Image (cartoon, rainbow, N blue to C red):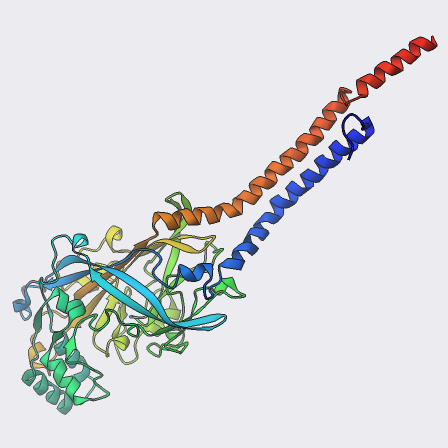
Length: 496
C-alpha cells in the first residue's frame, strides 16, 4: 500500500475515486439487500422448536393474562308469567382471575406440534372491587330449560314423561347460587343428578354437579389437544391450527364452518398484509372467529395494526352466504350477531354473542331490560405488530345466554309471558405485553432498520470521497501537485 508521501497524483486519484466508488456500491447494495437479509435472519429464529427462541416465550404464558367474568342477576324471577313486566337482568362484576397456561405432553412432528394446555385460575380480589365469590346470583333454571329443549324433539307421550321427571326431580324456573359456585366450584342439582343416573347417550351428563367452568381449573384436558404449525419451512403458516382433538374438523358444524381454522391467539405468522383477515379458534365454542384490520396506530412506541370484530364475526349467513353453515340442523337459525352454541353445550338452548348483544339484531333485547350495548365496552380487538406478527394487546370477550320460551308441554314453562334470551355471563380475556417484552420487540424491529441506516452511512461516505476527489482535482490540491508545479516552474526559469 502506498502512502501520501510516496504516491503519485495519479495513484492518489485511483485510491480516492476507487475507494469512494467501492464504498458507495457497498452502501447501495446494503440498502437494497438488507430487508431480505434481515428477513432471512428472522426466519432462522422465529420457527417453533424445542429450546428455540420462540419456544421459551410460548410454552408458558409470556405475559400476564386475566380472565374477568361478569354475571347477570335476574332481579324479578317472580314475574316470569307476568305480561306487564319484562325480565330484568343486572350485570354483576367484575370477578377477575389470573389466567396462567402451560403447554404439556408436547409431541413434535415437524412442521407441527401437538400439546395440551393446562390452565390455572386464581381469584384476584384487588382487581374485583366490591365483589365476592359469595355473591348470590339468580339465573333461569338452566337444567329445566335444557330438558324442555330436549323434549321438543320427541312425540307428545315422551314429552309428558319428561315433564313428569322435571316436576318430580327438582325442576324450577330459577336458581340461586353463589358466584363461585356458578363459575368454578360447581353446585349439586337434583335434576342434573337424575339425568346423570340414567347413563343415557342422549343425556351426556357425567356429574351431578354443575358450574360453567366446573372441573376446568388446573385441568390439562378440559380444552382438548391442539395441533399447530410450527412455522418450520413455511413461516406463513406459523401458529395456524391444524387439528383439534386429533381431527381437522370439529364435527359440530357442517362443511367449512366445522373446519379447524385460525390461531390459538398466541402465535402468528410474521410479515402480515393489511387486507388479511385474522382468525382465532375458540375451543369452548368449537369454532373460529374473524377479526378485521381497522386502523394503523402506535402502541407504546411500536407501529401497530388494530384488528376488531364487527357485524360479520357472528354471522349466520345473513351477511356472508358462506357462514350459513353455522346454522344448526333442525333448529331455527338465529338472526345476525348471535351464534347457536348448542352443539358444544349438550344441545342446550345456549347462544354466544358480543356482550349485551352488541352488534346484533335489535330483537334480542326486545323482551328484556337491563342491557346497554356500546362500542367502547363491548367490542373485541387485537393490537398486533405486523412485521414480527406479535400481539401486543388483546381484549376478547363473549356473552353466553340461554333462550327461555313458553312450552305448553312443560308445566314450569307453559305460562312464560315473554320468550327471551336471558344473559348468563360475560367472559373477558385480556392481556398486554410487559415492558421487558416490549423492549425486546423494539430491539428486534431495529434489526430491519439498522442495516439500512449503516448502508446509507456507507453510501454517503463513498459519495463524500468521490466529491472530495473532484474538489481536489478542480483546485489542483493533490499531495505533491503543488511541488511538481514549482519544480516545473524552476526548470522553465533555468532554461531561459
